[in-house]
Picture 1 (cartoon, rainbow, N blue to C red):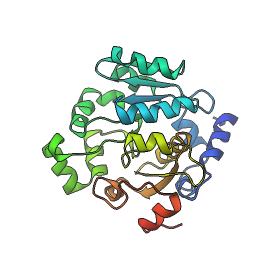
Picture 2: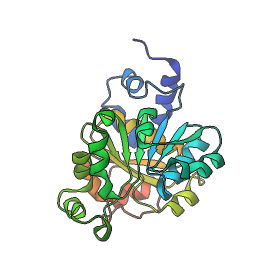
Picture 3: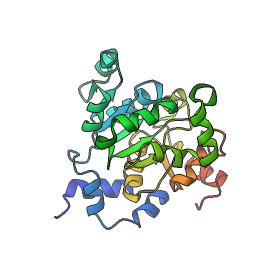
Picture 4: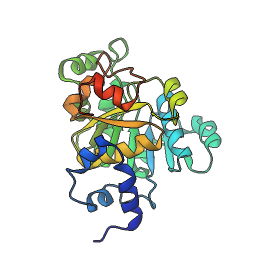
Length: 252
């Protein structure tokens, strides 16, 4: 099936940095992105946000401003009326199940201890979904699962509790205040490290990072996401892509 021109334009826009170029080399041509983003209208992906607290509302709001339709979800969608009203017609509120059904890609930004329940409750619906995981494990809040993260790494642990998803670690290294302040700053843009095992999901995630006003840096596979989890050398780094690559000893 031929790839439509809007997806071709979108793919070219996603391949503007070295990290995304490296990921793109692993893809099977333009059709991979069309399949990944097939439900999107034109070049704009629909994004479902699971957990609409500080990180979810900030990053989701940046995507709305970039032209993406976004469905913000929580256990109490009525509490999100003010958020979506302030963002305009591209924003809406709903349940977690509605966000999963809505999104071509998902952002999960919840306390880490909630991940297993989300994975169990929505196992079928999450299968095959591109999921950007912004959750951080905090021992005092999340208990034993935080110990598992320390032992096995956060990327591996998240994939365990969200099986079947096309998982990408992203947007977990900075506070919402810094994300809001630094989005779309003059070049060089602030770097956002990302990691995942699925090449086409990484490509889509890189595009969403750019659309939010940052520069993606592909750190590696999910096993490499420990390099920018809490306490890792890539965590809390409000630096350019070149500086982050240098700090993590990545190729320029």
